[in-house]
Length: 569
Image (cartoon, rainbow, N blue to C red):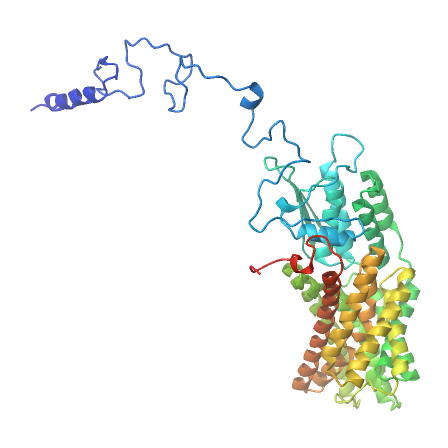
């Protein structure tokens, strides 16, 4: 059989399979014996439509069938576009979870930190709509890039000033919301601030970021930024973008409230007060004061030459240790350990430690890790500076006893006065407002009184006593911040100064310098435990105040949302 005869039956079957339903057979050309089932057979009178494809969809409406056409506005609409009768202000809830949506009462008598924190802890779909009145001059809406830039600049000042990551996010959200940008998501890390705004589900988001490169402690500037955010979040106060930028520029240009020589004198008085706190006398007070002032001037000199902060801390820790060694070699009848301990009190990074632990407890683990790493570098710098001096002192024959005890219980009145002086000078070093210095001074005295009553009179462990005293400091600071609608930092940071583990740090370093590494590590572990007790106590005191005081959201404290949930509790 030939190839043509072999293909003939197949061609007949193909022609019968692809015969048009109307019964009109398609002629078979010489090249191909099959036709597509969607092709129009030749000879069938079917009107053709210009340049459109000959294939039709199964969803197409047949010609000749009368179907009422939709109105033009609805036909041109998208599946994601809102209906013409939709109102954003009076829209019903699109979805209600099984547990219900908690009612949020953003009352005006609450600080903006609590209101914004409560909104950040709920999903975007459950947040209440922003106020109708927006802070812009025309009807075209706010300038989104400028609002985001203002938000990032405010967040940069707060983060550089030592504020916690959660409060920085709350401030950024408050600024955006005050200008009508409610669909914003701020994000804060240790050195990077970013914020994203998406006008709707079908529009592209606008994202901006800013890097924090320089940090400085100025609580006066921090209080001014808090006041600006409070005015922006107040619906009764109209602050335009231009006015907000002008006030922010004034805050950045303002000089520090205390000159340099006052800061140096405050550093010396802080070290002297710390030496009295651990059992020193008048000679020890003067020696610690002189050593701390020399260390402060050397640190300023290193900073002016561009050296990193690690070396600044190492250099600042050397003069107090050198003076203590010199008094020991001169056989002066003083407690040289109190001189060195007083110098350490002025260098320990208490606020950075508290901020790091606070960020970790509130769920900002990246920022917390970076802050704690920074604290570790500062601490290692202090260790290096003191160990170098102690090593040479031991080689020269200085008789230093790592087992000596410092503070006694015979001088409670003098120790309370010393703790208040320490808090006062610490507040000056932090560049606080003069109106907050008296409150934080009294808070420091109360903290040391509670610690002394529990540890010395009640014979309770120093870690537990420190945690309770720090908790009272955090509680008082949170109450004062809510009363004045300001930050809690000026009322808590300086007050924890008397509780810092200066003596435990010194004795640990001294034991290591004398080749007693085991004792040194035990003492340094005690110092770390005391520092953690301070940080956790301050944060717990703040959370207790929020737990029982009036907060937006649920009617009881049991319905208060957690900061960041990692489990289904």
